[in-house]
Image (cartoon, rainbow, N blue to C red; front, side, top):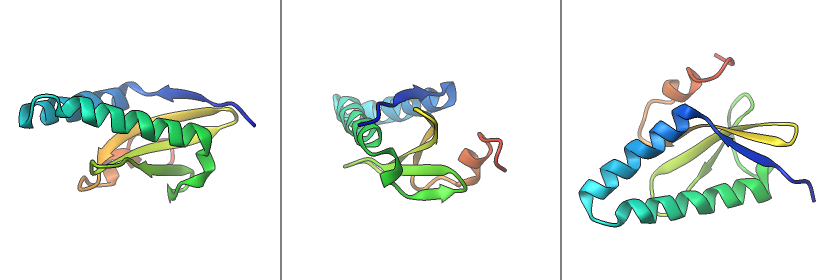
Length: 102
């Protein structure tokens, strides 16, 4: 079984921090639930990176459980690059702008 390295971009980290902050304001501890679901999503991507929908050219999306967010990533050799973690209601142009593919 091939082993992959997960690299999370600074922009994706900012997406995550924004979401965690919003969820924590909604209910104490909800940001931890979000983080656990996100970790589960990362696990799924690492175990089967090509198993998720291609959204734009080479960018794939893994939607996490319980929360309306998708992990947007691309695969290059043995590395998975997370470009963004976006709410499903956001304009897709936002994540396309983070790539060289537009």
